[in-house]
Amino acid sequence: MSDRTHPDWITPAPSDLYDRLFDLREQIGVLRRAMTRIRIDYGRLHRKPDALAVDDLGDPIDPIHAAEQVMHAIQRADEDLSRADLRLNDTRGRYATRLKLTDAAAEARWQQIQQREHRDPIERTR
Image 1 (cartoon, rainbow, N blue to C red):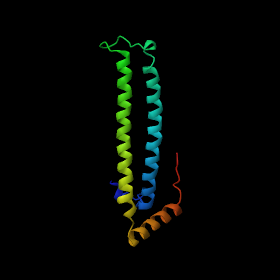
Image 2 (image 1 turned 45 degrees about the vertical axis):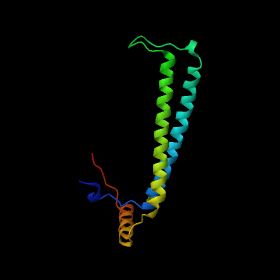
Image 3 (image 1 turned 30 degrees about the vertical axis):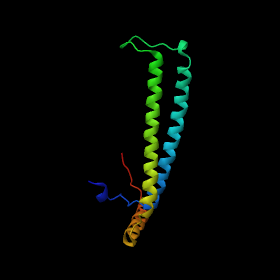
């Protein structure tokens, strides 16, 4: 059964989705700040070459090179998140702000919410 035909599916309000896009952008910001902190910490390791070593489980690798690769990978991931944030901001401002429900859809949504709120709880038996 698809979401649109499920009896408990309630049409989302575009304004709620707009707010959720904002929340998602805030979560990206939190993630980017965490990535910056860990990249800084890897930079601290990188500046202490005498304190770094690598295991012998794979091909030989220089520990400084390994730390650099981690920092570069985190930087690239941060750039990807930055582009995602910009894309979400653009679509939120250009398109998401424009969406609204028709009067009929808003009325149907309101009725769905009212039905859900007034539904008797299901009695469960053992």
